Length: 239
Ligand code: UDP
Image (cartoon, rainbow, N blue to C red; front, side, top):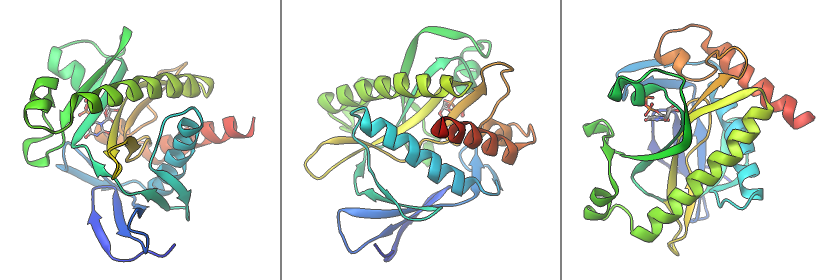
């Protein structure tokens, strides 16, 4: 499958058309941004790691019955995916307190919740992706009640599958962000990526942060953390 014209360039990926109107090629970049683009940088090799990790995790989810946009890995940075209309929501699942949860409520970091939480942000850069409640999602007709029920159910199922997987790699899945899309027939499927850019991943023993927070918070060792997370995943794959 050949790349045709570039349709979109985001913060971490470029998207290209293909000869098949139902399929797109995603190309992962090493560019990193944080705080809605206010902080910019590059993380050498990140695109390769995020592409391979996201594809590996999407294949695992698909085999457990979660529909995803993944079709085929084309190269170390490029993947063929199903074209969807993105639901303009960031779907965030949390197992432990971190990030905006702690900032918003003045709550300590690293507290495990009795139950995972699911929340939604409205994808809108100009507004800084504000938190949004279900009634407002329905008022703006961003998604239907049936679609939100599917999204919530998939988000919790994905959390259960990924939490168990990462725990077997010695990694705690603290929280993560998902995006969903609609196929032309209206079916909701998982889209975007699952990577250290979109998940908080802490070493289960030491609590060391092995994700994009190393970049966001200037903790150093950013490339090493991405490489370490990929190494853990590959070790699991071999075992
Ligand atoms: N996240 C993301 N993209 C965003 C916002 C959040 O991938 O635009 C991920 C983030 O990596 C973390 C989870 O969603 O794993 C929860 O993020 P949070 O709401 O705590 O926001 P942050 O502290 O990252 O601003």
